[in-house]
Image (cartoon, rainbow, N blue to C red; front, side):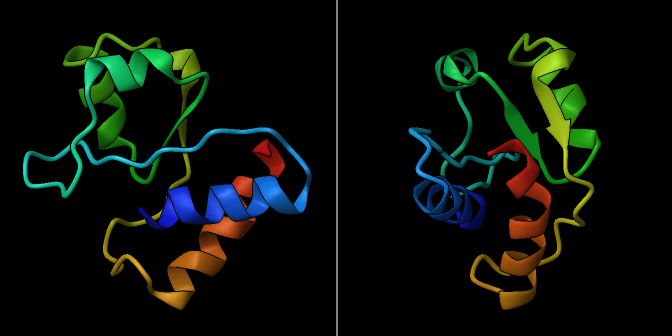
Length: 94
């Protein structure tokens, strides 16, 4: 959910009309990604590379729309360090 929050902040700050949603690939995720959600996305940002395979195999997403941010999935959702990293990594795409 941190990525969704940061993405929406960046979109507002740059006056972009972008819809951002956040979901996890693991079964225990608070909100798990669905095929419908993945199909709707123009781009899918992932924290770690292993998530790419899940999106490709389980949700049949083309690798071209999956962007790995190379952020270890070790942070709490509202960790200020995570938010700073997300801002830096997402800004070029917004």
